[in-house]
Length: 476
Image (cartoon, rainbow, N blue to C red; front, side):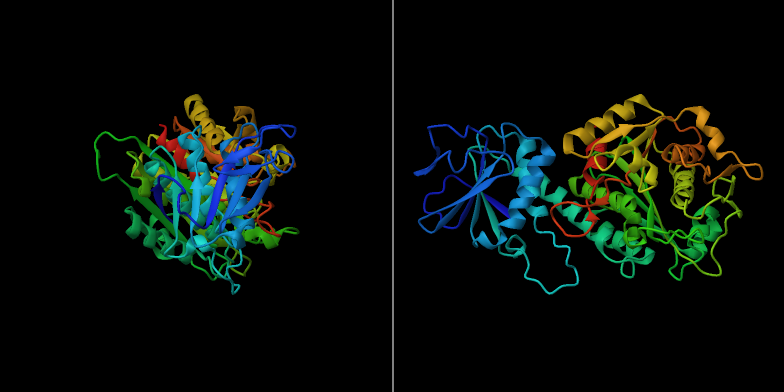
């Protein structure tokens, strides 16, 4: 999407988007836009409403915002308009920005409009959204210059669109090698370095927990390492490490899932969020050094699959007793965390994973579960989430939960075997492999990375985490 600023709508013909804050349904004074009057009886700016009016070959789309509106709701509102009014848009589209709009509100509106071009029908023959036409240019009507904000908004939406597609595409398309290839392509385009450890290289490195998970699949696992250093101000940078769960499909292994397996293409949504965040961080040229690892594997069933009661060796040198092969995400994350800490020593570490149904049972579909040993990180990452509508809520990491991962035969076991506190015991397992890193956070996003909303009939990706991680890093 390209944009250009125009001073007024004089001689403009096409479609005009007009955000309106709520007045009153009994207001005698109509909403006035130029020489167009809209009676409060038909529209007064109520949230989640919009109204179309025609005049002089131009369609005016009045969009209700309510009395006030948060970032996420504003973004969703304009994504909805881009989707639902697709047929109403002419070749010329203008966005009128109200005087009272902040930079953040402009960002939400523009990124929402671009997100509205996303179509889940990747394998259907459909006409592209008019905003995706190479000649399309959104005209911005404003007294202020929002060009930097708008450029940032477009970059945010592009990274989120990429992430949506990675998660929604089927597992016979998005294999570990597909993800590795995606990272290499984006690294070349946006300016970050890529290193990929395939099967043999991972064996040489001793990534035993990671390799165990992929043993039953015909698709070779790929351990993807991404490194970003800004081109300017490259000295004395803060260094952030990211780790994302990249399970491209999860059958549960030999502890095979008995329900919901059709949605398990989403089990790499944490990894996809890290991929999208790396694209966005590099695109924005944030003045922070970032090293990101996404261990990519498929947890399948075969004669070579790892077994419940196996004892495997992790990269850290610690042994792991396998209680449940469906607790596989924490195994690949364990090697990812250990590898990151040993080889790159970042100051801050955040891992992201669709890890447990327990987090969904606790928090539902409204926010992700946050586990961290650092109060400053906890505050900053929650503030980042609140600002962009990707919320988190903290759960405890008390030492009393260590008993859930204690094993008689190995250094640690991968599952407590209990029907309670599953998200916490999983977090304690990951903590075991952080070597007491002083600024580590784990995000369990099982309830927010993939789900139902108004934009499709079936469950689909949300791109949760892309903006959250970027905002957190931006504010360090």
